[in-house]
Length: 127
Ligand SMILES: [Cu+2]
Image 1: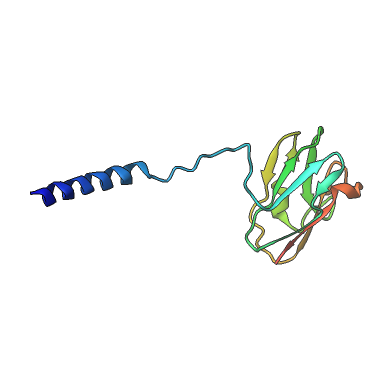
Image 2: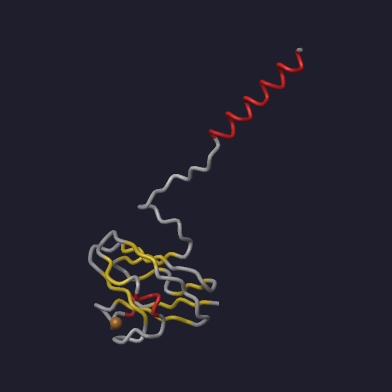
């Protein structure tokens, strides 16, 4: 008799625990979690060199007070690494990811509005 009561208690506890432990990951869109992140400030892009695995996406974050338009080299055609062109225009505080960088190669990028500013140029190596 006592054993039966104990069994019922255990089942009830397990059921309750299972219900409450459903995976709920809090989503905070303003806090990017991408480890492959390039930040833009008034002093330029950082890091200027980034190596990622094939299929990765790189997040560009504009922490400057003016807009930047990130695009693949070469300027002005941008055909080397089309996934970078998905970043495009970033107003201050905006951020956007590339699409998947699938091709194993080195991708230069620049600010299309400041194509001669070397501090706004960098390279993403996919390997
Ligand atoms: Cu350009």
